[in-house]
Image (cartoon, rainbow, N blue to C red; front, side):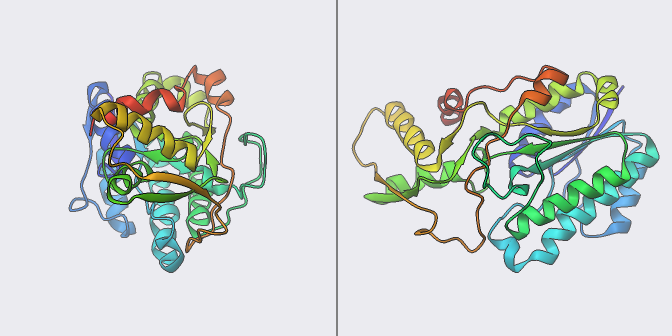
Length: 291
């Protein structure tokens, strides 16, 4: 039986992964009380003892603005810890699936980023995730790095939940209309990961970086409009919802700079592993039904 070690089970993607990966083998999913990802010795002892066949790392520091003031912790969780996990994976012969982000790019491109495009992060979060990618590549030959984009789910803090909450509390909301990406439901990341793990031999043959996100793209404003339109239809009333107005990133300053364009191409993962992601708009109603 395949032994799968999942790290980060309380996160948006990790929560979905725990349920989706369970049928594939013996799933080990430690909580924070069992494994301290800020402690190198703790990581080594735990991971080596599992003798896992596959390690899926969905753990990390994901609060983009907070990473500016906590850059050391972000680097520890997003770069140092993945590097140690990769070293352990190499030692026990495991395949390592590691989640990264499209925030490794600077957002100045105007066509979908490919895996061959040079990263150039504009904030501390992106720099820490890029350092993590490089640490994984250096330490483990059998790695699969999945760059995710605009993740949302029914838990933690994310754009979709924030928009749905504020749209019922305020009469009007200003939403940026110049940030472009591909909203991707965490459940779809979990499904794609499970499909990948259905053939670990093939994973070993094709290591590398792969972009993975919903098909098509939109602005933050268009995403919010779709969310609220579907929510209105679900609750059967147009009353009591905020009016949305466009604004720009420059007029809506964040602590951390944001790349304006983070759309990526799924062609490589589709051609290599036949992974096909749904169009982002098609998943909004299914997501809302889980709330």
